Structure formats: structure tokens, C-alpha cells
Image (cartoon, rainbow, N blue to C red):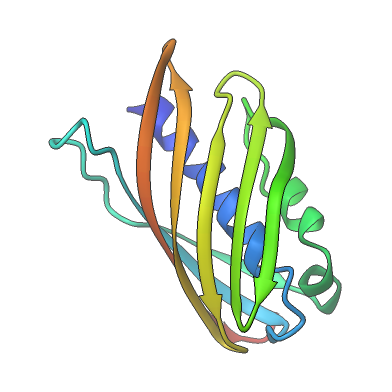
Length: 144
């Protein structure tokens, strides 16, 4: 399951990047959680993964800063294939090279102090394409 834990971190990195693109978010300390499920492995149901991240005013304008700060071993060359921000909702597709060949698509809705959304991903796990369905949420919990 260690491999799947690494993929969760990759997904979290891709999830954090899109919400950071919005100038509407408040800088500060954010609590971010990700709940992942693998539809083909009904017995695998990890606890939600949570971390705190300081979001600076600069981070809110440049999602690439968060992608690089949250990168995980095995992920490289992460690039947005699509990104569309409209009306408080960000839709994206992002691909990462490296040993997992991660491909993600997601929709995240946000306000100044919170966000939530869904992310689907396909990763190469042990030579097999593995699909994951994820729920991501965040809330501003204070200053950095």
C-alpha cells in the first residue's frame, strides 16, 4: 500500500495547484484533506489524508509554486493540459511523467476561505493503470 500512499501525495499536489490559481483565496494557513478511493479495490479505503499548507499572496497567483513545493518522488514534469477558471470553479487536467505517469482531471469550487471538489486520476501502479476517485477539501484556519 506504500505505492498508493505516494499516489495520494501526487493527487494532493495536483489538487492544491488549481485552487491556488484564484486570486479570490485568502492567504494564510490552510488545512487540506483528500479522500481517495480505488473503484476496483473495494477493500482499500484509507483514512482521509490531511495536511496544512501556508498559502502566501504569491502562491495564490502562481499555482506552479505549490506544485513544485508538494512534488513527490516518482512525479516529474507535471504540466496542465487544460485549465479553466470561471465563476469560482476551476476545471483542470494535469499530466505528470515519472514512474507513475499520473493523469488527473478535476473540478474544484472555492471561496475566499474554503474549497471542495473532485479529482479523478489514472496512475501506473506496478505496470497496471489504476483509476482513483478523490474528494478534496480545504479551509483557511488562520495566519501563517
